[in-house]
Image 1 (tube, rainbow, N blue to C red):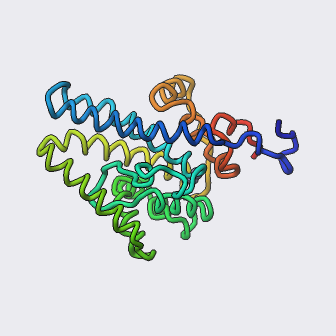
Image 2 (image 1 turned 180 degrees about the horizontal axis):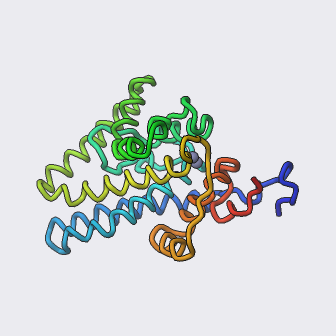
Length: 254
Ligand SMILES: [Zn+2]
Ligand SMILES: [Zn+2]
């Protein structure tokens, strides 16, 4: 057990390990399977397409949280090819695991400063923050290719993701909107919640804990999982100890 001196506390016993990495990998893969499996069932008429409006937000947020935890556990070379491709089809041109991991490490290293790769959505007011979160997949891609060398892996992954996205549009036709609108809206709202709402208070920039009412905690936990609830409410502790598992974050001394 970690000692009780906050300055010298050893948190290694609370770090996520291989079991957590396997679990979060599995969650991301199951989210892909459920999301695209349900869309396929909707397209063949086996279930109503509108049900995606209910399930897509849950799956997208669960996927986002699992993906985030995985960034702190596995390098791009340590994940399987599908996880590395990062085939959540949000936009035609998109980044893969390696690039998003790099972006997230930049967020930790330069949190809420102009050098933070996520700063574009933190600066300015709430409305522009929300609009930037809604367009984050496109902005992340453009900002990456403008500022970093584009290597062969990114080109191959980008072409594969473009083929998947185009194939989905081609197969689903006008029904594509039943998939794309709830997924993009959920992704944008979650991005806004995970960045702007956790790193801005009025004119201030930093990282802040979130206090939810008991019923909000229950609802959040049921929909998105206890890990996501604790990871969101204690994001300040996550920035202090990024490798500590979400269930131990409330105990991290700040
Ligand atoms: Zn953060
Ligand atoms: Zn993180």
